[in-house]
Length: 134
Image (cartoon, rainbow, N blue to C red):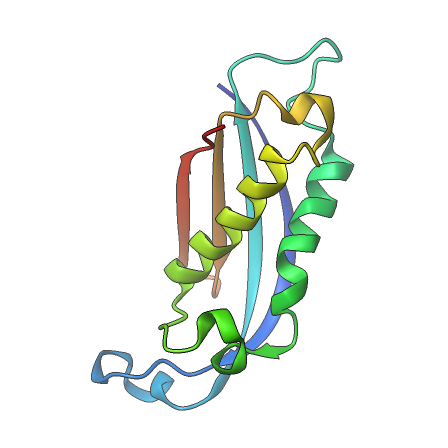
């Protein structure tokens, strides 16, 4: 399996209600380094997995609605615990939509798997990975 990974970052604010989260129950900021990894079984006729420029643009577009936002106030996230794992799936879904819509160019049509990794610090990260259906 071949893969190409692109990187971006977001700065957000949020709170995580519930005793599990200790001091993170209070409103706090976070900066996430976000990696998106695109997988396909064979290279295309240009010997690539995906156009890196288009992959970078797709990741940036998926992150844009979250940049410098208080996630507690984002309507689609109200009442959710916006953990690192939750955010990885949220971003995955946006990128999977971009793949299915053809926004990653001709090579993007053959992407079969996607992984979104959020690095919340130099010692901790979480990801969501699955096949891209359709």
